[in-house]
Amino acid sequence: MTAGLPGVLERPWPGLDVAGLTILVTGFGVSGYAVADQTMQRGARVLVVDSADTDENREKAQILEVLGVDVRLGREHTLALPAGERVDLVVTSPGWRPDQSLLVEAEDAGIPVWSEVELARRMQPVDGPAWLGVTGTNGKTTVVTMLESILLAAGLRAVACGNVGLPVIEAALDPGGYDVLAVELSSFQLHRTEHPACEAAVVLGISEDHLDWHGSLEAYARDKGRIYTGCEVACVYPVHDERVLGLVEDADVVEGARAIGLTLGSPAVSELGLVDGVLVDRAFLEERRTSALELAHLDDLAHLGPHGAPPHLVLDALAAAALARAHGIDPAAVREGLRAFRPGHHRAEVVAEAERVAYVDDSKATNPDAAAASLRSAEHIVWIAGGLTKGADVDALVADAASRLRGVVLIGQDETPFTEALGRHAADVPVVRMAPGDTDTEDGRRTFMQRTVDAAASLAHAGDVVLLAPAAASMDQFTDYGQRGVLFAEAARRRAGGTA
Image (tube, rainbow, N blue to C red; front, side, top):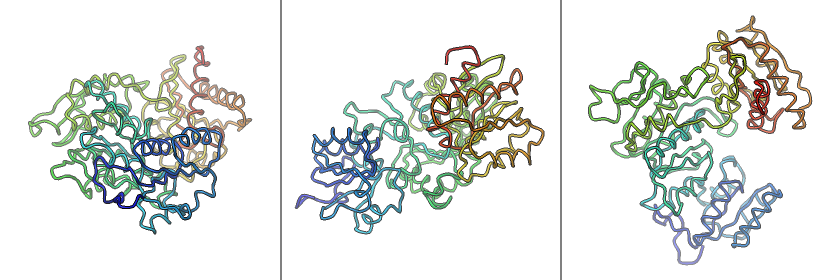
């Protein structure tokens, strides 16, 4: 730091001035690059370290180095703070674990360690955009993109950002100036975020995930709960989730912020819910003790599933509506935005229909809770499941879905968790175990997925859904869940006689 200039913690914010600070950025992914770019432009000395000395990282480094950023690639640069150099602030990638040696050394030395999100919140101008925050184990991206659709329908300049798409710091400092940000935040991002200060925020639910990173379910939940810190208007929560309610009750919020519940039943006061097929608001209207405000109909969401919107997507719509209403959005815009919304790829996406059988790609369902939501979306399902379970227990998932299973097609290298659970809870359901085959090449994966879809189709009856909701990660046979979903969609379309 330049002599005589105050340290980062002594500088006022919002509108934090980073000029003269030495900022160490750990991790050169999308958010790390954005932090380096935005802070360098504003007069900070920036050093970036990343263990991956790849062609892609070297190409990005060349761009920033021309502008004066010091980029050091290779594992040796990530093990400790740079020797003999002063560092005023560390901004870390969400992928870096809390016990990473460089981060521990920085904390022990009294150097602040922030997420990109914390830095964005502090650097954003006083008159910058409002934040509407979304986190939870499942459903985050669906809700922020639904919310974005509603905000755009209301005529606002808005964008979904954070854990999806645009880094928060780019959105917060955009020279054109957004009115409002729909901010998706992961538990990793929230771990190093002290002041999200959202206008309104929601935790969609908490279930076991990323416990190897956080250490325990309690620590994971605490990090999720940080999104409520500093909420100004509303802490939104699903009324059936006692763990999330506890996070709301423990949150340090702005005086006057309210707890707003979400339910698929008839809502009580200060809740949004469902009455006779209508999404209604009993929270953000003066007459809430005696009246409910109509927001949308289930028919407005019918395009979100082969047999209409499944319950988990209706709850997602209520969450997006609650955040929008907290910002003062008119009910007509809520309805228009929900009508216009289309789910992202690999998120309960209907990709084909053949012989009155719908093919649904929910490859993003990489854990049992996410798969459970999809499996409740239709009466009769041929389920494509399997992959890397990472130790997750699928027993309750199979028990809950058993009555809806027409058949099961198992993929993945380790079918044991699924075959054992199916044997206990769905012994009469036909199960096809796909031989792993050659999945080391893209052609091999494409052939494998076509055989998988053909096997599923052979079990399906008219009116059924063939559902890819693996409840497991993909890396044993595919590069990622996206590739798994793309190949499923291609195979389903070929089956339907269309172009892949």
